[in-house]
Length: 469
Image 1 (spheres, rainbow, N blue to C red):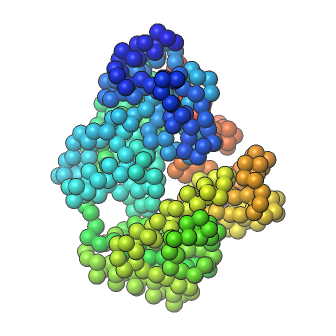
Image 2: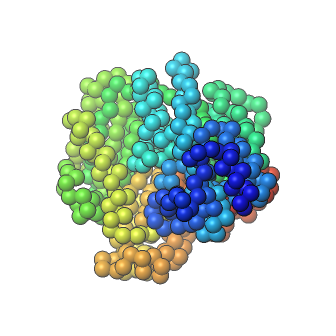
Image 3: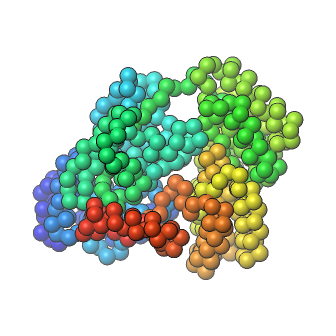
């Protein structure tokens, strides 16, 4: 081990390799939720793709496992080392260069350590849009976004991270560099290696750079909150908005009553313009014509929704500040949950038409099996992704609740997800948290194919071992 560390120190230079006790590694060794804590042999901080390759070649020679990490904002424990003290934590945060922006081709090439916010800002500086948007965009990194195939709030219009990426640069487990930074929309020359690495959670290779799709910035964005009596009404509103606004509908977010009640408890300064209701929807239109056109579209949608009884009340943002305040409500729910205490998280995807029945049935089953539990249900209704989280009953210690009931609650929820033909992971990935559930619920054929790919690309099993598979 000492020989390997000496080699890495020589390769990476001053500040490129952090070791305890000289350096405090705690920020790298625990996940954002504070649920997983490990111990790294050292933290490698390469500043270039070639240095990443050198680190992986060194680790392959010495048989040392490598755990890639971006902004460490993941929710499934996929980017922290285990407790053995024998894994290298590979941090990409020093690789933050914007390599190229091609305005005619509408592409942007950036390194994996760029924060999502920096990527958005680089596009905006040229009057263009990179539409991936997450609550953690100030700290999450592009490499992590691609490794987990992040979703966010505009999947309805623009798709997941996968759909927003045209090309990749990847370092293999053996330390070879695959240069696939193509800006082509069409390239049928064999297997799609890009899609293989996107969503692989650092188990097949290390993403070091990407070429991304850009879009023209909309001339106007309009945001509104709407109160819906039930989920069937929320789906009715979604269908109406899609019919009338088509591709201009870029956001359709859902929040249940308890989600917003948690905001009132933990963030009382956040203004909630609507009275409490069963379900609140946040809609956003991005118009390519004018603000007046977007305004008229919104008025038509909400007027029709009110007349059909799909909506009981609505508030339309009259300024950028009001729009940001509405989005802040939606994006602050995870923070309010964190303040309330540990909870049992589910990041699920379901066919839109089956969401009302799923929620009704599963809410009832959880209430019967675990009296007093509080449901925090919110998410991206427009693309069928719910964050269906279970908070302990009032007065029950959250850690005790998690320890005693997590396995049974997961089984109940995931059984229902399967009955309704959904997925147990929509945008957060598998990591450590859902590894056993994936093994139990994914088809044997799919699992065997994934294991064969892993064995072919990482025969020593050194890249992020114990994650996903």
